[in-house]
Length: 421
Image 1 (tube, one colour):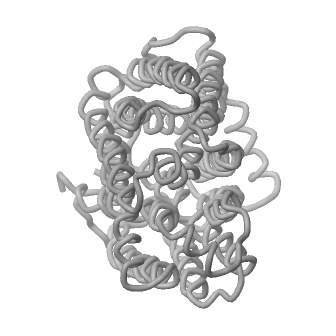
Image 2 (cartoon, rainbow, N blue to C red):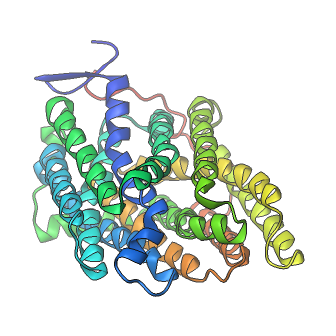
């Protein structure tokens, strides 16, 4: 049946619906982060948070739970299948979001945010795993780019939805909105998402087999190198998210309208992801991502030098004019690095996805938290972090590729069909 993915004989789902559904599952993570950005000041005031930088812990606590739990879900999904693990995570996410509506203290809210992250970890692992189950090589990178393009609509919409809710309510209603969204995705997934783990690929859940799966992932130079490179480059994104409200409202005095500029950056990232989906099957993952990473390093260095020479910050429009192309380049890096890390590991896709997600979100989240907490009223700490992390990521790519950039490997260029067709 052309145009459909059939991982289970009882279920048939069009490719476009699979892509939109996977993007919606992943979008729960963006929703849990970006929709709260306009509410951080309100949360601090309502729950008695003295330090403005400590408000960022609402983001960091979620990322901590989200990153750490992914190591568990991968092996479980390789044993029990993708659907039951996803449903457990979505249920936990929904309950934690609902409980956060009535959180009495900042400490309780942080604990619930961490639990929410633990639930969301399953969505991240299963989303990437389902794509790897169904596609490979450049086709996988193309599909992931389309998923990321739709996924990036949430950072465009979420802060503005959060700001709109704040006009009529408070951060508690924001948490309720997130709970309702997760319930909708849970119902849709239960009705339509096929089981993509083939029976012959199920792995017994023993210490020996699990340890062997981890060994396979961690001993693959390309997979491990791109996983750690992804963690460092995602630290850039999380650092920007942590500082966004303070930079826009305190450094540039934008006010509540800052969500529009934040959303504009996300729109350009989404456009870059779409462009990547069109170009990657022609030029390859390595050529696009390596060139984009080098450009990212150069733009970060230019922005840092300009900010330092201008006393801590450029004019707003110069800042915005440099941030937009920088994050457009990010749109060519993150997706392709994911695909390059996952491509050699289809036989242990669940475990590979969990390690990749663990590195990106816990490692990247903690790095981003350090950058965010270093905010000092200027943009210098942010772009110093951008430059250092992008150079570290470039060094890791050189290790993964044995010092050679832009070279297309033969496996990357092989045509890939959707499994089950």
